[in-house]
Amino acid sequence: MNQTIEHQPMEHHASEAQSWNAVCSIDDILPNTGVCVLVNDRHVAVFHVTDGMPRLFAIDNYDPNSKASVLSRGLVGNLGERIVVASPIYKHHFDLQTGECLEVPESSVHSYQIRIENGNVLIAV
Image (cartoon, rainbow, N blue to C red; front, side, top):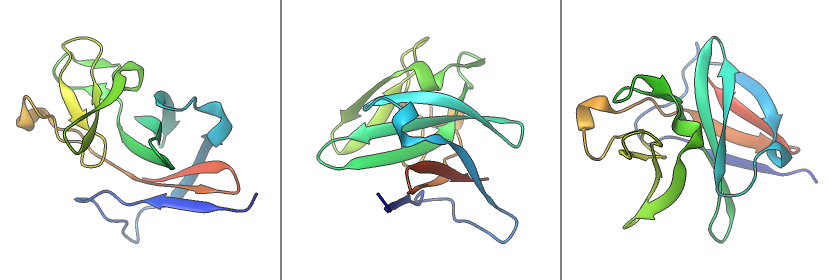
């Protein structure tokens, strides 16, 4: 199947310095869960959300509140219109589109452009 699904974070846009990195197959990520991938020495949490149509999101895996790389293991859900992940340690919610920490905004994380091409997940870092 030749399809491209692209997500562009609201606050971050690809620049000339960014490059697309293939990280895994979409089949490697169970729906409504996340996985951690290593991209250019960064731990990135990749989430596969299916709420009518499959969507991908990518944010830093490092939770600044707990100081641990755990966000990919958090529970995916929503708070109102926002799709979020709850950190497994302190349960802070991170918006998957923007990386904003809803309880402690100064602890927000980066979000990344992500897309699917021919079943492969690519991230711009």
